[in-house]
Length: 238
View 1: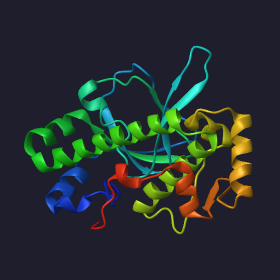
View 2: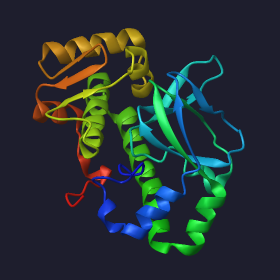
View 3: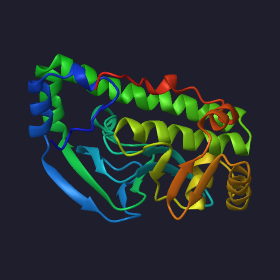
């Protein structure tokens, strides 16, 4: 099923077969999107919501000088812009990071689900609340951690989220972000992120090279990041 990664590791088992079938049948279109492709522009009216099937997507905002701040990174199984359903437009841009494949849900389909399937509606709402929990954690990361801690936290979170959808194992995963992307997600400069990545490598904590991440010491990296995965609401029954 195309929706097999939706809420995997996060309570997907609460959906029965009818819910999963309805979620599958609601897909109107599947698209392959090139790397670095803008999907939704800030303020643009939206008529579909996007489930990420493969690849990575980011949400970001630009300052008046065109400098980008990444405010979220999405992994397969995430509903990227579900909040666009009630809000009708987004206050930020959405773009692919590497090549991606997406499934599109027309808002008329989501409206029918809301009217007829309360349990499935609750799980869709839960997925948006997970986004909110991650946003709060990102605010903490940017406001209270130093540069090393921010980057460490970023890698810890992605490792945990990718483990839930079977795309990370033993601290190893593919991540098609450039050093500039990591800097924009962590609120530091490109020069600074280069020094941080070198420091983490020299401490034998993380090796990040050519789009591949290897976490060498989970415990010490999590301590540096003050990382507690509770905000990701991971379950063990999926």
